[in-house]
Amino acid sequence: MTKAPIVSVVMPVFNSERYLREAVDSILSQTYGDFEFIIVDGGSTDGTICLLEEYVGKDSRVRLILLPRDKGGRVDARNAGLRESRGRYIAPMDSDEISLPRRFEVDVGYLETHSDVDVASALVEYVDENGMFLCAMKPYADVNVKDVRHHIPHTSSLIRKTALEALEGYRDDPVLFEDGDLWTRLLSSGRVIHVLPFCLHRYRIHAGEVTIREYAKRAGSAAADQALYNQAQVCLFYGTNAEARRRLGVLVRRSWFNVRFWFYFFVACLPARLTEPFMASVITRAREIVNRAGGVGAP
Image 1 (spheres, helix red, strand yellow):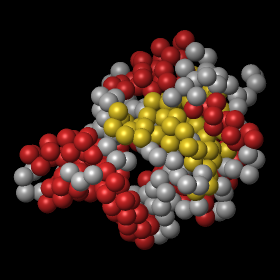
Image 2: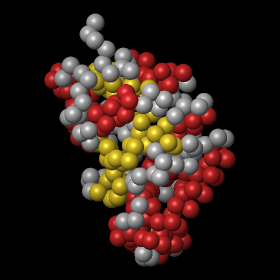
Image 3: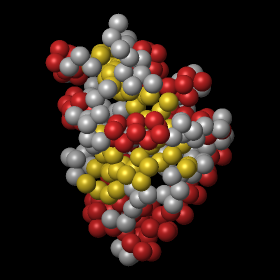
Image 4: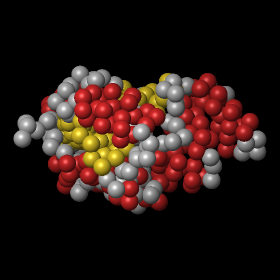
């Protein structure tokens, strides 16, 4: 048995061929190399497995686990990876995202020197389906996040394995999704989460994203429209109004009588110094509503 790594990266995949190579390469290019990369496939029917087998043959850190399709949901895959992990820390990853080179170096260094902290997360940059930069999160006034009204990026985080195991891993949650549910349970049990003031990850907003498809289903809209809408929302929230206007302009031309699209299009025409506090209040209110719907918290 080889020496256990410090970090276990766990990434669920399912028909992820389009962005998979970029995601895997971003992990294998980390400046901190003491990790294992556990990739859990949930029954892919495209070229995902073939591509992953190529990486397994090239890099001994990569391990591929195959789940049957009826047991291959995202939560099942994360928990299967957690059970197989040998590292002290768990690094969640998604197959359509990109970790910047120093993600593990920074997060590991932080947890190693802050024994009271259970999760070190970091800010993210948002990109569209083609990888074009949309906007970036801004640092919080306090790195210590005390409730889930603050956004806690999941796939830029590093989590102590003992904290995850104490909660018996991830759970399905139709309102909060598995990451919001996890943060809620960790904070409710007294665990400490810090969001570091550095961008260490790129989060891709696109029509094939699991959460986008779920939001589209709830809204009764097309996934492509929902992706544009979510891209516009983050642009408004973080002050890149021109990008928001461009996307909302497409949406109002497609759905001329959609009041929501028109409302946010006019908001996007205002100066960022006005829209940023407005959007902060909107998002806070939305998270409070989700908080009540979900019982205890919101992502």
